[in-house]
Amino acid sequence: RAVGISSAAFGAFASKLAVAGVAAGARFDPQANLWPITSGRFPGAHPAMTYQLGDGSNLDNTGIIAALQRGASHIVALINADTPLDSGADLCAPGVDVAGRVTRQLAEKFGVDGAGGHFGFYGHNQVFDRAALQPLLC
Image (cartoon, rainbow, N blue to C red; front, side, top):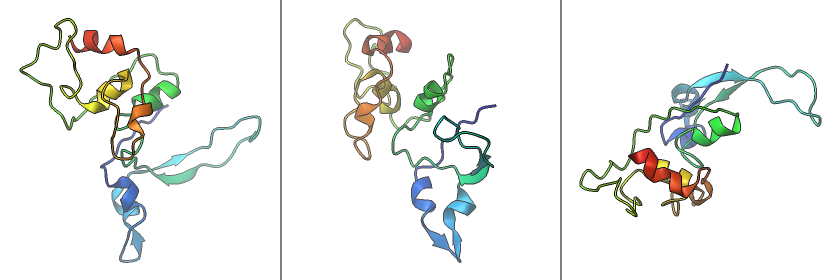
């Protein structure tokens, strides 16, 4: 069984804020029991712990990288984009520059438009060949 999670952008902040003596994250962020990953360094069974699941969009705003790290061979990513597709651009035209014409949340995975972001981490999110983005958009 696998779980993917993406929360509202305030998830990381909410986990540190208290309202009426209760962490706001405990009220607003989804929670789940998670088991630690075992290894040679940390062998054996360990009990599950309850975690607040909120990403805050600090590293990856799609869950694609986490799915790849877990060995997924097929991924469907539904991105509620901050940037709409540029309907005036022919994204299938040879040599078209797609930077700024598709959401950075997708483009950065192909090494396009990854600079900046909230904390500057998005520039390190390339996991696919840059040349594979345009055929995906067509």
